[in-house]
Length: 605
Image 1 (cartoon, rainbow, N blue to C red):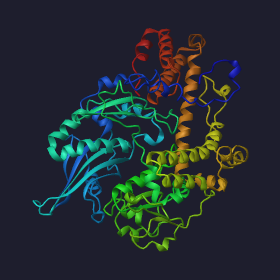
Image 2 (image 1 turned 180 degrees about the vertical axis):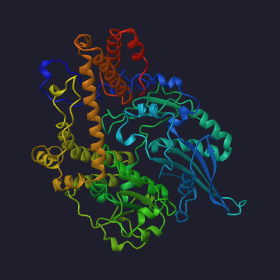
Image 3 (image 1 turned 90 degrees about the horizontal axis):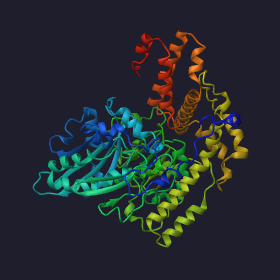
Image 4 (image 1 turned 120 degrees about the vertical axis):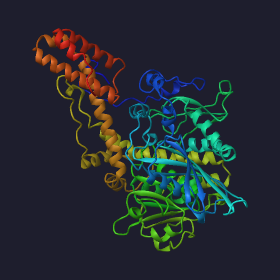
């Protein structure tokens, strides 16, 4: 927000208004891009300058084919595009994580996902461009920094012509993007074609992807792939949570084969059905970053359940590590299973019975049965003691000694039970549960947002000729005092020890991740306001009052501000950067010619 007049100087800096009404509602499904000019809306000129494979790289790092060799075991047979780089450690991780555990007995086609550490700190030539496209994404959809996702389509069928008696192969998409629903849909198109036609088909698919627009938040994209057209919209951080901006239009979608209403959400009700009496406790465990292991019969159920856990605290980003599918061959196996120290803040999804013994010391274990048998009512109500968990064949349930801070919400349980009895469609049950988690998380986070907003300095403290003021520190005791009058009781019917829950949360990685993000956003807001204040000044008049040396110093400082504004994409009003550039040019022109020549040279970022 800019300084608009003396009557506003005493007010505190306000947070940006909900842009959903202005931006998202103006998106018409009939148009490719209809966001208004501004952050994320105007055409990016850089897109026109992208090189071959740059567009592909904005979506995927590479595509791998993992097969089974009798002598070598699992091996990466193909990496495409061929110039893609993977370290030996990364290839090993992909090999072991791309096949279900032998105990899973997955015959036919199976889809799941995994997540693994990036082996080397390689930098993409698209780095700055991708940061720009990423800046308007919701926290949970920003691309990963130190990890890759692997999206797997595994096929195992009987084949008497092979020594092993089975054909076993996985097609794997490696990406930094957490678009699980989108990539699984993409694999359903690509994998059957690949298994039939082999590598030429893969090459054609990659060439299709290299013509896609980049995954820019707020845009509705039509993505042709192997004769099929997928229509998606990448969400923005300005969207109203719990809503989809993508609707099908019969007139404009005549060429569209698949419309995906979501690119990342899993079916929460299906995933939590075996343990849905405990959903509120699971929400607390995830919110607090507790060490949690999901034991499931297959990688599909393991990965879906872990992703459901991570997303149940949305729009809050889960800041700890999570592994939708974890094996004994994982490079972090020793680190995560050691008994010499407390289990780390991580959610693991496992299928190997060996883990029932190895992870018995973990404080919270979710045992998921076969989700295909979810037609009956779940009967498991009591939380079980950890000593009862002997093998992976133990009954479904939650094994923990944890005592929830909040009283149990019987209403949501009754609502979901009634839905099962009345055979309510699964998407409706999922929507009810997703709305419940969203409202619970929002009730919890709003008091924190309100307190953090109060740490912003007053607008009148922003002077163009001084450094921007600092945010006041977050003081836990001061925040706790605000809860009596402005706590979650204003928006949630739930009773219980909210104070205890907040105390625990303030020590968790999720609070640390959330506050770092908010502090960065607010600091950038202060920098933007400072920049706008500078633009309102009469710099020519000020220059006349100062020496040549001071003027040169001013120009250099203004150039630094300009570089910062462009590098950090500061949230300034449209035209501010151009106005500052014009101010700088005008000041330089008032200097002697020899200095003009030096100062007109572009500054190094």
